Length: 504
Length: 113
Image (cartoon, rainbow over all chains, first blue to last red; front, side):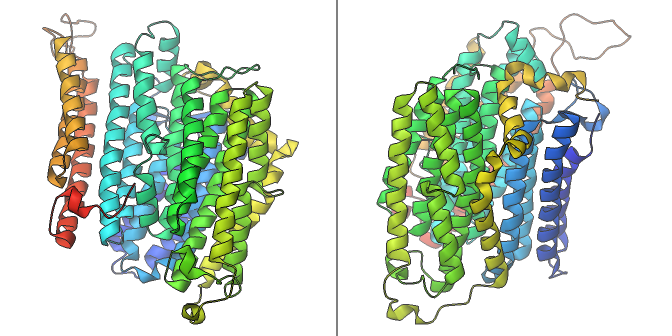
């Protein structure tokens, strides 16, 4: 059965972006309305895709009616629907927030145009079943994000955008080179067909390609030692975009694409009951986890601090998936979802604080807590989530990761995960202590009011943070996290449904 | 095989240029060189020594080795994407020049990784 939901997930944001950029000049209200409507539709579609996978199994859509392996296909399985929900849910809430926040910039038309373009690119990356198509969507999302980082066109924004643009382009070239080598070996671009051919022997090119993909997607995901661009790029963007970049872009372009290719196409990493650790991922994960959090400790700029924590939290996800037991993979994907929620919330909070106080320096916003009850309480919730305090969502996923690591006999990984968690807590104690408590300074007497739309988005994110742990309940787990983990566990046969036409 | 290795050397040169040079324009040129190396690699993958264009005059009547047309279609896409990124980087570099009055990375560096 083919389902038109899949192309619509890409076409609707793409069309919205086009209309925003084209007509936004004349119709002033259009960009806001379009941004809200398109992301709402996309989020609804993503949630629907979860039930679709549950009821109908994995689905395939052949572009233009050309069946795999000749034509380009879109495929939808558990992992894809998990990523779709993560991306589009965050995008929707960010769009609600941006309505108020982006008033200070001159051109909402261009902002929403690029924002929706980036969303289309990310949806494309997670949906596609074709290697070259993956590269094209990856570049669509990346180019839009370079422009969005430079959106403020100040000194820092431009410098960060240039650095990000160069690093991102080099990453894309590594990925493209890997794709070329795979094509040269297998003469196909379809992921499922490629996986089948590589499994039939002829895998002599696989180690080289694995290295290229680890470097390329590692750069996109900002894993240490490929992380240098992230702490500049993410804080320089407008707050809603920081939330999108840290919350979902590095995950869909970096983590998702990397694990999809490593597990389901190349088959170098596997998920088995007793665990089959994939050392490069574990090493990269532990390095990112520790280096990110240690560098974060010394930061006073709130957004920069959050950016370093993104590196650290991505390390958790990569580490957990690298361990390779079903439980660890599920824990990693759960942490991926949770991180996108609480990190987006933290970035949006930092934006609200910057909006109200005019600064991002923690020392200069001291005592803001009592003046901005909504912002400070949501920051508190998100900080406790990221630091792993029960009962917030971050606690459950970190606990699962640590339990899974110990179960698989990786006590050292578990040790580093606990240590990074303690340092995260220390770092966020600093944020709360300096940023929010204490007597209000003279400067903070006049605070700009935080618009309602921003508050609504903050509260909704906070609610998901509090309720996130419920996803582990058996009935919800079988619906959302379970199928996603199963998709990675399926190995190189997982995408086979693409060739047979999927469930009918 | 020599052609592939030369391609990879060109790719390495481009990356080296992008990473080591201190001038924004030279960095962009380095990225572009690396891009061309990858595109060239793509064309080479599709090439067959002494191959003919992949056109069937009559059904089932193949004229010996045929050139693989798919990489040539893909490389066009890749070139267009490369154009977009290069143009964006050049535009950003121009705006940086307007703010700082220089293309030298050492004088621009206000953000530390």
